[in-house]
Amino acid sequence: MTIDEIIEKALSEDIGDGDHTSLSTIPKDAKGKAELLIKEDGILAGIKIAEKVFKKVDENIAFKALLDDGAKVKKGDIAFVVEGNSISLLSAERLALNFMQRMSGIATATRKIVDKLDGLNTKVLDTRKTTPNLRVIEKEAVVIGGGENHRMGLFDMIMIKDNHVDFAGGIAKAIESTKKYLKEKNKDLKIEIEVRNFDELNEVLKTGNVDRIMLDNFSVIEMKKAIEIIDGRYKTEASGGITIDTIREYAETGVDYISVGALTHHIKSLDMSLKAV
Image (cartoon, rainbow, N blue to C red):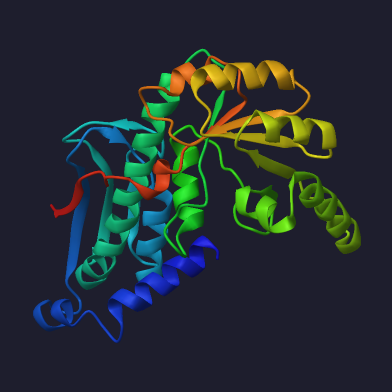
């Protein structure tokens, strides 16, 4: 789903057959001006999407961005100013805020984790643990915060996890079946496989034919040993049980990526409001 499609569906959900409160209380030709007030320190995200929301409601609204996506903001900052038909401004207000608060919360959390890895080569990845139908927006917020996107969905990368291995009858069978499938379907997709212990890791190394190995729920000591065993033959990813307090230790093992599901599924929105001026 594209951003434009998300906005259209969200406006339809919110406005329905009309913003009857605004329509019933405000003259239809009334003009107004408002500014977005930041009420909490963090990383700003969603400016461009907020502009799309206002323009989708009323293309005549004047939108002036004062700050850019990715900017560090503090309480009291003004992110943008909008001016135009008062009813249109109010009809777009809540949706623009919802997107920006959620995205800024994700970007802020991402930046905190990325900053923990300053000076190291390890990249922070998001996951598919996103709000249904809002994935493209939430993943954009991760990038704004300094992280990188993992696969977008089930369609753009092969990710062989523990259940796939168990249902397939083992690691070798899962990989062999995947290679056969990709050849039959004429698809060129990267292959990542999850391992839970050193026995599984050794089996993957023996089988080969993958692009990345995910080391799931390994301790820091185990991670370091695994990275040494892999010895640069494949890209590596750490996942599971990693917190903001331990992520640098994991990164110092030399792992290429660390995926953090909490970037999108366990987030506090950044506080902000639209105020008439």
